[in-house]
Image (cartoon, rainbow, N blue to C red; front, side, top):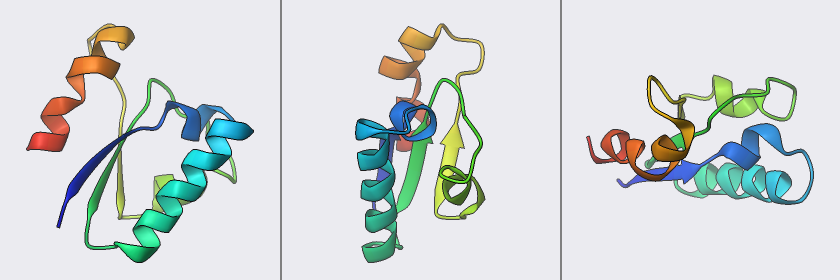
Amino acid sequence: MYRIGFDAKRLFNNFTGLGNYSRTLLRNLAEFYPENAYFLYTPKVTKNEETQFFLNSPLYSVHLPQGQPKAYWRSWGKKRFTEA
């Protein structure tokens, strides 16, 4: 089992190009490798039918910044969740 951290800003907030790619990639990873733990990091979450799957599935753990500047959190703050 692997612990995989993913910068999910595009997954949750972009509904073309990179957002579509991110959602497809994470769905396929979970389908073929359900034994892994997937940590999705995003500064904000847009809730809609395209993102609902990731918010409701036990395969994904969504993390938002808590008390840190977003730029710092996206680079360094996420590491502590993935290493635990």
